[in-house]
Length: 336
Image (cartoon, rainbow, N blue to C red; front, side, top):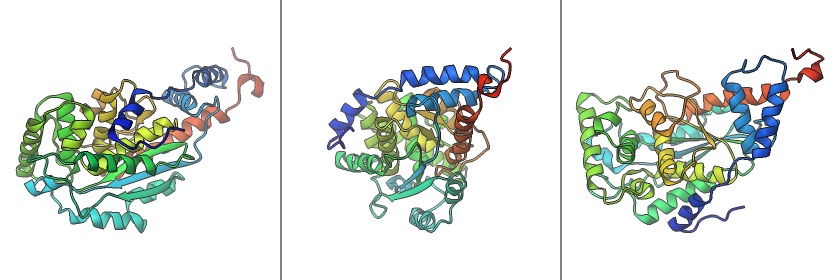
């Protein structure tokens, strides 16, 4: 097992030596898929998902029995620029709602048999306003990455990282703009429901934050523009990779965390699938940049890991069909 990183340099070393999927398990799963009692390709993307899952679980007959939803919450100094329709106090209130089981994500996690963890990251100490200075110091970034890293249950067989943080669509838009280019207006959306003036303030904040950058290194961009919860999701995704735990990506904010890994190391998101395309304006644009095709498109824009949690059912179904179906030989059915 890879030791817990102690420094940002250690995180960079992990990114430089990522484990690959089990090629033998993929080959065996492909062979099994060819013998199942169905026409070739009849289950569409479910077949691809099962084979992908097999590679990361190291088994020709994968199952999903211990999914984990890991929620991270953080507050953002850029909220002072009027970029959100809600005050930062809502982050604290929603964390309490998660803890008491009252949020949408609690219901979805229960529905699909997932355990749920919640980590609140220094909600009484928001990140700095990234239009004026770096959002996080190196120590802040390290602490947030480690929170995500340590939140992952090594016994989990599927991970959904989710978030809560008033103002975090602005942070996500700034990260996406910095990493992939384009105008701020290409990346900002209405988030929790800002009006036209609020949308203009978001674009201005993104412009100012990106203009301040002195480095295009993905981890430096994360420190300069990110929230603690975004860094924590990146840490959780990376930890999952070291454990070969498959990940379902949620919406725009979760994908901004994934984008940092994507540009930090080739193939860093090979263990991830996109759970859904959200209604946040730039999410589909970001998914395209990550080369991820979403499993669902239901007009969701809640965050919390909700769209990815819904997709747990799709991944579980793919595994059950692949691993539970009979082969032609087992069923006594002519293969044609």
